[in-house]
Length: 457
Ligand code: NAD
Image (tube, rainbow, N blue to C red; front, top):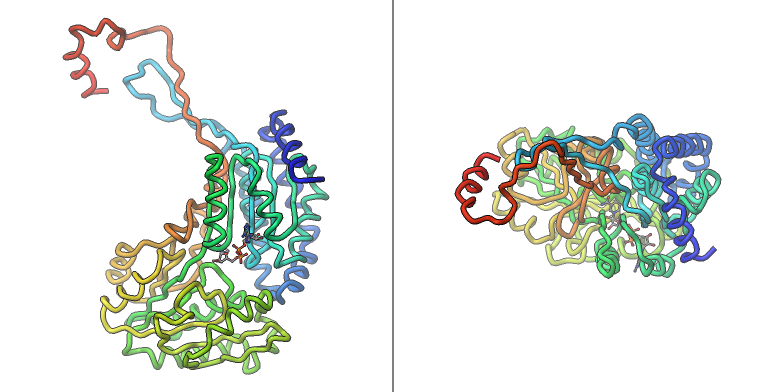
C-alpha cells in the first residue's frame, strides 16, 4: 500500500472516533505488551544481529524499558484521559473549568538506530494512548530490529490504526511531504532541522529529540574510583553510541593522572584485556560511522585503546589526551567509544570549553561539593543531567527527558509522553442562573466599577 493510501485510511479511521475510545486503547496496549513479551527473544537477537548489542544491555535499555512503560500506561490510561477540573475564576462566576485531552490525529514518528527498539516504541505508546493514529518510520541502519518492529505491529494492529513503514532517507522525505498533525523525531541535529522545516509548512507541532556534545565535569573532591566506574559504564555502553553519553571529560588538573589510571582499570574490569573478544561490548553501527569515528582519532594523543578492526566494525574504548578544541574530535558529537580528557584549573577554564558548543542534551558533574554542582546546574543550559553518575536521569519517568536549543524541542517520558501527544483543550461551562451585566454596553459610567472589580477577580 502506498503512503498516501495509508494516511488516507488512517484519517478515515480516526474520524470514526474509535482511536479515542479508552477501553479500545487499553486493549491495544495490552495486545502490544503481550506480543512484545512473546517475541522478546527475537527482539534481543535482532538487536544483536544489527550491531552485536549485548543481550544484557538490550534487556536493560530496550525491552524492559518498553514493557515498563506499557504497564504504566495500561494502569493509568483511564485516569489520564479524564478531563481535569481546574479552579474556576471569579470573572466568569458562575462557572466550572475543565481541561480536555484531545488527540492531534495523524502522528508521524521517525526513530534512530542507536536504541532502535526503545526509541521507536516509547513514543509510539504515548501516541496511541492519547488516541492518535500512527505511522512509525524506524531506522534503516538497524534492519533486523526495524523488521521485527514492523512484524510486531502488523501482527497486532490494522494499518489504518498503526503502520510501520520501513525505509531510508527517501521514504523519510516522502513521509515528511505529507500533512501530519504531529511529528515526533529522534535523531541528529541536521535531520532535525529538515524535519522542523517540513513541519512548518503546515504549522505541524513537533518534538525533536536530538543530540549534542555532553560535558562531564569532575572536580578535585570527586570519589575517584566510583566516578571512573560510572563514567566507564555511561560512556561505553552501546559502544559509546548513546545520545546522553558523556562526550568529553573536563577534569581538575590535580586528579587527572590518577583518574585516567582509574578509568583504564575500570575499562579492563568491564571488558577484559582483549575487548574485541568480550561479549559485553557492542559494535559500531556501520562502515560510514566506523570511518567517521576512526578519522576523529587522527593527530590525537591516545592514552588508552585506539584499537579498531574494520572487518568487525570494532572500535575499542579509547581515551584521548587534551585534544585541540578546534580538532574534528571536538567539533561535533562523537557518538563512538572515544573519550577526550581535558583538564582545567579554574571555573573560567570550564566555562571556555562549555560555552564553545551549542546547548548539550546532557551535563554531568562529579563532585562532593554540593554548592559547586548547584552553581553549574544553574549556570549552564542543557537538556537534563545527573550529579555523581551518568545517563541515569533518563530512567526516572517523573523527569522530563529532552533537549534545549540545538539538542532539541520538547520532552517526554511517563505521563509526559501522553501529554506530548494530546492537545490540552480548556473549556469553561457558564452557569445560567446569574448574569452580571457590567461587561455589556452601554459602558458609559461603569469604568470605575470595572477597574475596582478587576482588582478582585
Ligand atoms: P539521523 O538523524 O541520521 O536519522 C534519524 C532518522 O531520520 C532515521 O529514521 C533516518 O532514516 C531519518 N533520516 C536520515 N536522514 C534524513 C534526511 N535527510 N531526511 C529525512 N529523514 C532522514 O540520526 P541517527 O544517526 O539515526 O541517530 C543518531 C543521532 O540521534 C545522534 O545525533 C543522537 O544524539 C541522536 N539521538 C537523540 C536521542 C534523544 O533522545 N535526544 C536519542 C537517540 C539518538
